[in-house]
Length: 197
Image (cartoon, rainbow, N blue to C red; front, top):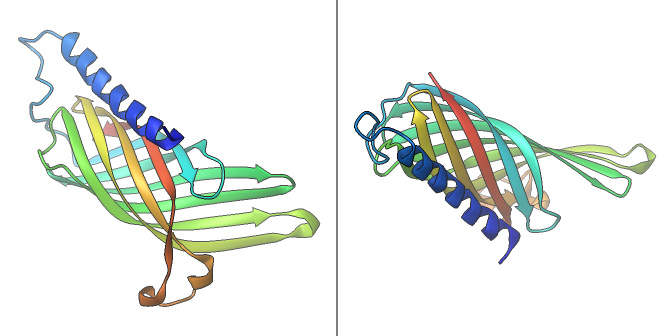
């Protein structure tokens, strides 16, 4: 099984296990059930660990953060940024993916909530190499995926998300949106801890 597939399976199992432990370790008469509705605030902010497996290159762990607005129980809008650094011989590549994502909760915000997502991102990449080489590129990419969120309380949640990313080819960077070319550029798995207000 490929590394990213193992990561997706482990992420799903980790959140589901946390949900079962939460459910089993609380007083059933006083605690909400795992599939009960959760009343949460309008805003959440969190940090996350990110595993990125590009089509061309080595998979690795990185870090980032996410900010979400929850205007409805079936919808959240997320803005996120991550930081990735890769060293190849005497070349250093730094990437800052900035993503905007819509999260749809088909069953609403239950204590354990699956969701689907889709959005777009802007990928700022800086390459530093030998002999003073220094170049920055800005590319556009789309993503889609699925996730699972566990609300530990009204103010705290854990989530795990899988994204499939299509990134714009460098050759079409300056073309109109209709003429842009995209390629399968990899898989992204995140594990987040969120504070809700």
